[in-house]
Image 1 (cartoon, rainbow, N blue to C red):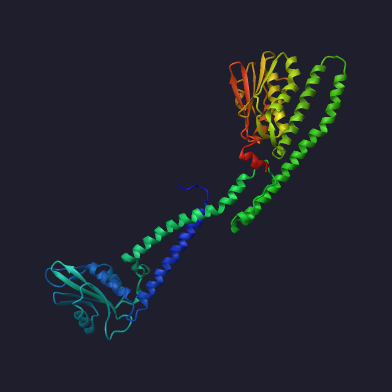
Image 2 (tube, rainbow, N blue to C red; image 1 turned 180 degrees about the horizontal axis):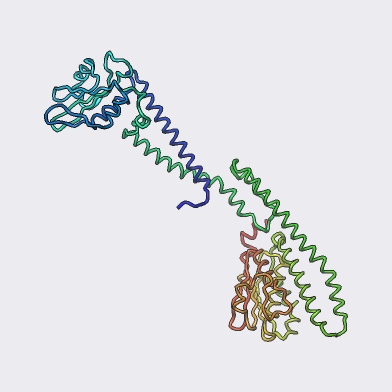
Length: 459
């Protein structure tokens, strides 16, 4: 079933087939015109039609001459007063219309004709001298039917194209239809192949490389304006996204200094009611600003990626958060393989992702038990806790921005979202899997430092 969308390939194929068929039919028409109108013995299409009409309308009689019933022959006779008909049967001649002696003698002279012929009546004016004869079979024997005296100017449009009834011409038209269908398929395939390079290039343009544009040389010349318009749209989009990123970054930077001053002033306050709430609020806003800056930094993550070992990155993140974990009542453990686990990544971004997962386990682990951190040889980082787990109603939206659990007091709702964005910028992902004793989060990397994809990405 054809798609409801407009198909350029289909349109091109239809145009190709239509032009092909028009040229072919024009050639047939011109050939027919020369065949039937420019013969030295006059126009023969009219006599052939008159003869065939007469044969169709003739009715044989057991006794007496054949008779004509009302039909197409009489319709043609109404338009041609000089139309005549001769039937030669069993040595007897039967006539209709203005049959001159020259016509009778000519038909009698052609009685040995076994099938059909075109001839000219001697001493008759052109083009009415054009005539046609054909042998037919009656129950009581064969008969010759001859007709003529048709003015070609009286033929209708339909009668003028009766040549198409010829089996040879019909076969040619069928061949045209088949060739047209083949041409449509070839044209559609060629059209798609012509578009394939530019489609591949357009598909490869990602958010991590906003400066890339389509190469006009890879597109067919006719699509040049479309390529220019597409590139212009990308230019406008890049400018707008850049403006928004700069705005968010500028706001975050502008707020950092005042927040730092307010935090110091809050810490210097005496122990009064509400001080702890104020400090928690300031910590939350400061963390939110830091995560917003981290999200913006991801736009440059690909350019900062390099071959790194995951083990020291995770070890540093665990060491940074170990005092907090112990202070909150957790046992923190780190399990790493003996050999390096190398991936192509931005070490700062991966450090931030590991920190967020460990901080999430500290915040939601229930305040006791173990928090396990494991680096796998399959380029994964896993963080497990023994807390109450994730609310099933919250699980589908866990990695969306600003989604927070009920027990989170200081979180901003951007931590896990930031982790997912970091991993997606590395063509990886973050998984949440319920555990028998808490929750398990895993960072999965799809590229190792030695893989062909990673080397191509860097080079």
